[in-house]
Image (cartoon, rainbow, N blue to C red; front, side, top):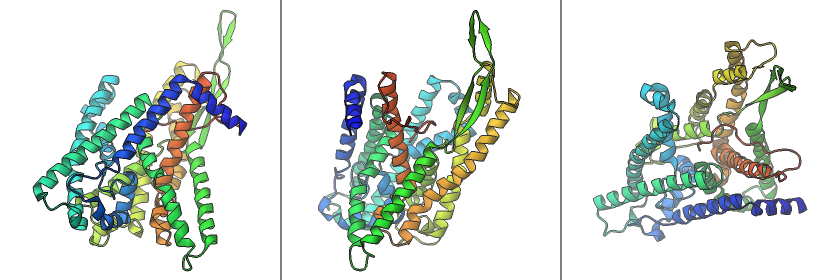
Amino acid sequence: MKKFIETIKNIWSIEDLRSRILTTLLLVLIYRVGSYIVLPGIDANLLHQFSEKSNQGILGLFNMFAGGSFSRASIFALGIMPFISASIAIQLLTIAVPYFQKLQKEGESGRKKINQFTRILTVVVTGFQASAYVAFLKNQSSGAIIAEYGTFFFWLTTTIVLTAGTLFVMWLGEKITDKGIGNGTSIIIMVGILARLPQALIQEFTSRTTEAGGGLLVFLIELAVFIFITIGLILLVQGTRKVPVNYAKRIVGNKQFGGVRQFIPLKVNAAGVMPIIFAQAIMFIPATAIGFATSDSASGFIRIFSDHTNGWYNVIYAVLVIVFTYFYTALIFNPTQMADEMKRNNGFVPGVKPGKATADYIGAVMDRITLPGAFFLAMVGILPGVAAAVHINSNFASFFGGTSLLIMVGVILDTLQQIESQLLMRHYDGLMSTGRIKGRTAPANV
């Protein structure tokens, strides 16, 4: 406890770190306040039925990403997901379209142009999703819409407000990245998810302590499994495979340089949380296309994508997670560049020739460790559906692994790593006496 208090004092004594933390808290507070501001033309007192419908099936997952704003018909109802979907599309274009490939290689100027394209596409995606959201509001809670608002006027104002809300949330994320701590988009998603955890625990506890709920013992078993899954996710996020690298000796004057062995830490889950976000965004598309239909109104092939407890939904979702894990790892991990850097610095992997042979070796190692990581990530992704299928409360089931828990674990580790880096840079002790905190070394875009 004394060590913890001393660490808090050290954090608060660093002016730059204190300013970043306070800025992050202020921007997060603005986001949470905005998530409770109801859309114009909606009677908030008549949204009970809509709230129940929007917490079911795939819409419950969408509501989770929006921090509960979706079910409250808030001005931030669509959250940050349109921006994530636009980012996915632009990243795919950087692989398939030569023009975007050229922009990616232009450094800072190219990155600014790509960001501009992403923002423009975000407006288009948000407008499309906002129209689907209006249709869903009319189908599920038409009584909550104030009669004085005409159909066209309500659609127009709601689409404009939702688009502006998403762009404002995107701006908040960028400001948290620039002026705060960690990745702003990830923190916004994590805060929205974490805000729903206490209520989910209370609901699950209440349902289990009833006569037909199984009793307190079942609830304690669920908590134990929840903790076990959390530990497994921490191991997945922090797991590395160390590739040994030797550096040749160099004599410069009377000093010797090199001649030491170091390691390249290759992450088991180098892609971080992005594959599960990519897969989730793809699974949202059919629900968006049919106007956010619920599993009751959907039919046939579309019904699969409207019910996250459906077996085929989980199979498709798991396959997408595995595919996107390899895709995103290949996107951010460049073994050829690593081999060239090692060669320039007189480094080599023992028993492997420098150059192309080293690049092939590192790439093969990365492929082998990515496979179990991808399968474990896919298994974690389908756990909420499995938990809901065994009659765990739907709100608590969404935290039972899957996107929510993975984002929470990854973002919290990233944030703690940022704070620890600031402490160590100023010659303070880190947050842990047993070793440094390891976050996701890959770029966190979500």
